[in-house]
Image (cartoon, rainbow, N blue to C red; front, side):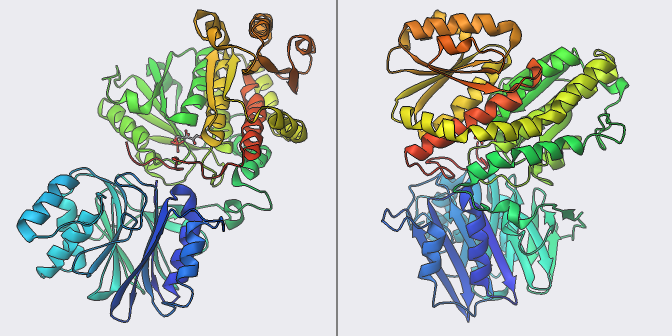
Length: 619
Ligand code: F6R
């Protein structure tokens, strides 16, 4: 959730680390800091939440603070923080420094037994932690062990041996200007080495500028970074030979490219990335090719049940996936929120296929659910965006979404590319099991191929949606209703709105309204009614009439042919003609734009909404 960057090499460490932190600011942003080794001195500078009129990011403020300083330092570690333990403040910001001023540490994740360790440090070593964080204990432990004569590597092994929880750590030691030591357990840490030096980071986007060939540390691995070398070691200090991952992302894809916000840029990226996701999976005969995923008919026949497990937006994609797989492959599917799956002793065995859906590939709830399913014997297929991420590496098969870096906290292209993968998986399974005909497969594929250009067409509604946003941005409650696949998309549309506009928004299956929720409808209510499913259009019309009769302001979203929705709604937004199954890929684009323009009208910080972080690596 937070971001880590470290650098040791020929270049100016301050510049490398601050530039990297700038790329990671979207991961966590209530405070930031840097520690440098500068001619025998351990220097630390931090900045925390300060409301002022400059509207500058924490990293730019940190840059200002460091302007004239530390230009000769060649070793630095830095951090952007999303507070978990303790308020956002300079004291709680990283890097944390040991009381003897010898060690500085940056940390992502949680040290679960930090209270115990704090107590031990006080009782045994008379060391009192200064901050409210769990992370500070790491710096204090390292300093105790280094004072006892261990070098930083041994001290790190000893400290992590005492810690429980999930952590990616970067540490420097005043008495050893030649190294940065990194450690990973259940939180991502990436390293690379070039002629310029050695780099570590929690996220690929911080390293793209320096190298696209990186190493992903596995759990309980340690990286020793020196200016002219890099070594990854296991807990027995044996060198681990690791695979290099080549990351096929351009640096430009991690930049705004002229748009006001990353979110708007990523909404506009969708035609291209959807095309990419699809075309990478079609062979020269236009048939689906799962590219390295060995799912044979025998395998499929053994699968009695599929679990799709994910969080937030990815969970919403999973809901659509359930309908598609059950319809086309005739395999029963359960969709579960990862944080619930893990603790409810789910009925999983070797005849279960577990599908994890995740943009970051690092969401701890999803990772833990995956491990639980594996323990029970399930085969794991994951739908992941970030190549080489933890979930990708722990899965039996990976279906990459190829969305490119998603920077805005609110997921947009992440969601639609996950959907595209689920269409392809469901169709492929149906073809193999012969539960769909060759004509159906062909027809759906033709429809999917037309999606990118239809999405481009939908983006032309921006002006209309901006006008609508001006009318509704001050409302206090907004509902999303739909039936069938539309009910799934309603959930996603509502989540988009609440996370960036902070308007209380609620999604419900339209047929459920009359069982209670309709009591909330009045002249102050806005209802987005999704009515894209042909068979359910009339039923939706009745629901729209019901809420209109309670004076709600209804905006319907339906297919172009359904002109008759105009009479029952204040406004209608149309999606192009298509088969019912693929409407989620289109209607969501309108809902993404609605959320974006409402938040913009309200003046909110769209790419970095309050209280949220991009990658949730805590439970
Ligand atoms: C919402 C959003 C989150 C994520 C969720 C899972 O816009 O982005 O709900 O979808 O935290 O994240 P991943 O997909 O990285 O596992």
